[in-house]
Length: 541
Image (cartoon, rainbow, N blue to C red):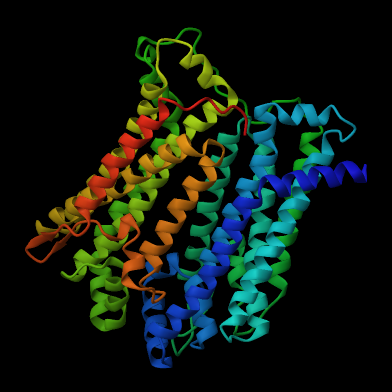
């Protein structure tokens, strides 16, 4: 039994060596770069106190930052990046859990392993141990990266442990979702919704908390304790250094992991506890083309991303007035927003640019998820049935690329319309409508780049499509949103398509890197379709 366990664990480590390296090293580098940004941009206690006072006055900032816990460099760093370190660990863990459970079962590999002396439970137990080891390594390297900056070892170890514990908590969420849902796509969607919901609950708990008299700390309200992200922040690294909230994340993850093992033993192979919606006996005429089939396969996820886009759009315009007022009282807030947004106009333009940068990331995720579906269909063998018809492989890939770009346009259109509604409800002048339209157009072009890049990776490195495509979005998001705050050179931030889109600059429009983006979009799309003509099918993971 132990030899079988060792074989299963080694197989998982070998299969994930590239993906886990990217996730873990990327998280550690983000922690290291975060310190560099804090030390350069907020070098004095007065600077940090000014930002914390602004954050306590603005719930929006608290939704996207951590728990204010003092003005020391370490405590301010935890406020700035700890939620994002925990978020990276959570994403790594959920994808790992679903990939080695429901993903293998859906592909038919799990049934072959279950037929061996390993049985049904041992592969899941190997996945649990695999996920625990990955999070331990992530926690250790993150802590070492922080210690290397000269920060206190106790707080650094606690910050790394908090991120790792959040990863373990969501390892359990992913394992449980894999038992509840019948497909890996459904399981991943469920885990992402849980992740987003708990991230927002943490922010609500902090925003509803009680600030200290000197406006440098917050005592969170009770909703923050309902979220693994909230538990991570309650450790307060470099301040009170509470270790026991880390145990909550670990215990939560292990309880869910145990529940997933129990549920697996009482269900049939390839079955889930959430019933699938029955399909029609015969297809509608609208499904008579391969293009329509792609729409059918991806429409659900596109709707979800569009809802997120609409929320982002309405926040961009309804909150611009609030941010404008707070920034008038505290100029440091305006400085931060201008660093992220890169716009040179008024503060309302900067606020819209910042929110629409987030929108571009959401639209890029929609594009990647749509085009990655081509790889999933190929790996399962269902693409082979389509390609056996008069549909050629170039047209087949082109359909996924076109729907990916259409997904971007739908998400951006939802945001623009919602942004206009928000501007109208606030009675803003007509210039804000133009600002929203320009920002939306620019982010649509930037996000479409990722549909083309995913297709290109799919053609050249089919088995690495999912890992590489999502890594590119993550890297671009980090450079585009956090590069300026971390003090990275301007050229490095400009490597992100999200950071070089057109913006309204006073009375005109600064096109910035628009033409380069259009050229990359055309060249990448042409290259992907040309190379697809001679590529063989690559079945299996």
